[in-house]
Length: 389
Image 1 (cartoon, rainbow, N blue to C red):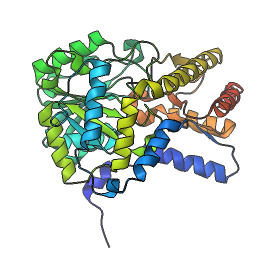
Image 2 (tube, rainbow, N blue to C red):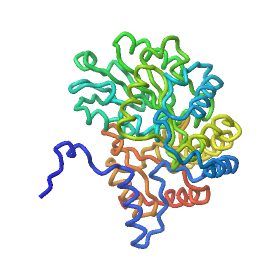
Image 3 (tube, rainbow, N blue to C red):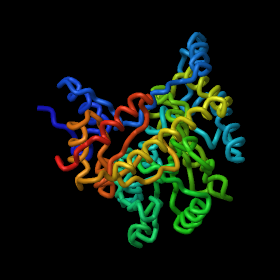
Image 4 (spheres, rainbow, N blue to C red):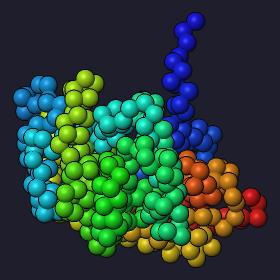
């Protein structure tokens, strides 16, 4: 009999795949399911972006092997975009590497920078993928509480000295999934100073950087010498509503960027050049495409916030992303609450415990369905008789 590796004990079914499976099961049993559990934008690519991809697909040269690092056209567009957006200069050869979605780069990063027994700091509640690569290298994880009373910002005073002394890597994600919190420039600056003192690599996940509702978010590289201790991950998925295209990038510290690219050269062969070229076009036409997307998600967030508050939910008012993070009027166990809501209304939500122990008691709403379905889901949720829980 074939036995799986001991390593597989780390891996449970992935939260969001489990939620997809749950939605399918309930649909098969006659429920009118509205899935608000996964951040999967329904808006789709803009017409100009779709037309550009069609044009690139017709170019036979794009059918050949891509460069794992990413083609020069896209890396140049990335460099230009950061210069315009953040007034930051990035060397397109040494400080940028294209990814098959930022998720795979995040999962592979610890292979490039950590050894067995090293520590990685991860905020909690959090996106589950940050821990994957740490497991791969047999590293240790310190889950840093992200608490509502602190605006879901990391309080580094929680980190024990014995952990800090052996920490190599710190994952941060702002605008934050699942809470919608944003880290301001002052806070970023303080984190950079602290990381320099402790010789820790900061890995900022900036997947939602363009889904801000008020003031534009900041890049860590706007701070002097941040490249010496930091990298950032970006994604086209939420920014341009094209998650299925699987394209993103890492940028920053050249040693780390090149090391991650070397890891990838031994694992994958890069993203389809037609997609890379279409993404370069998106970056070159950024505000033309993104302005309307940002407006839609801000309006949805405000509607969800107001209606849920009126219905006695405790809601953290988001400053970005496509998520709403909230406590229901009744119930302590988030899985039980989400199951109750699903059975009562057909609305599927993500339980807070799926993002870590400090997510218990909360649920996450995703606003990535069309407005008609979002309104229907809110109507159903507002009619829940919580005494039945």
